[in-house]
Image 1 (cartoon, helix red, strand yellow):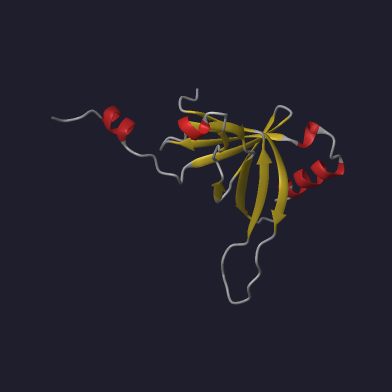
Image 2: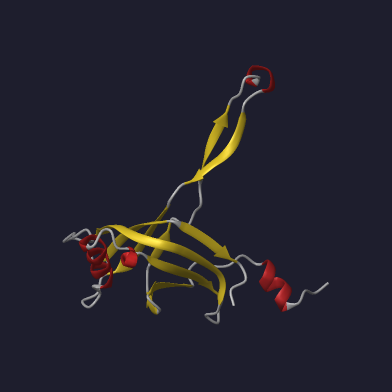
Length: 160
């Protein structure tokens, strides 16, 4: 029995190479090209609960506090690409200001460039900006890496 194109598309795994990263800042949206995005994970610290009858009934393991999200963005270095450096500097020149925290939207797109799944990273704060490794015997592209810590991560499987 033949399946429709829509049935095949909905059941087929999505490729990871077609994505878009948008950094939001006071209503402005900066779409930047990154060669790698990693750390999109939510993790809880389990708590072992013991009470007076634990020796008979056993211990209970319950979900505890959620750990912060640790995100890494890698990007090819360009001559006019000082956006990440400017963002990092603005956060640490005024450490008590929340204006340096930014929301980040990562869209996994289909072949038409439309978002299929969207991850929303809330209140991301840069913690590290790493320059590329310089090697005279290599002809690789210069890649900078930024590490961020964020308060929340949401996945939207039906973005509009």
